[in-house]
Length: 141
Image (cartoon, rainbow, N blue to C red; front, top):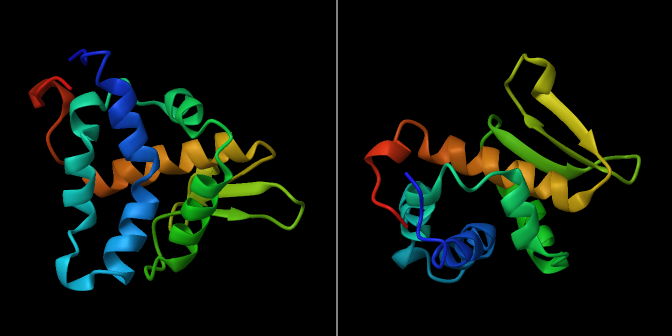
């Protein structure tokens, strides 16, 4: 389902800044924290899921180092030993991958930090929403 193009930039901004929101809610106001699923739902991601691809996310990051650092911290702070990760690699690049995956995409090394971060955001958010409402069932954003 196509989104309202006027709202897509707002949804993209909420999605790329989710790592800061998650960190704030879990560390600063733990009694009022929402689940990851609830935060993603509130972002509007489900309504724009088809239009929010790696390219759109990369554009929304707009060379914003503080957002990239927030996602690196979020990934490092995850307590699970499974799922998507995003980290600096030993060769001054970035690695994105799936900790328990056995496919060729288990670990992907990238030199472009914005592309790597966008790739991680897309896959992490998709993993969070899992089998939730599909785009054809969601309201338009």
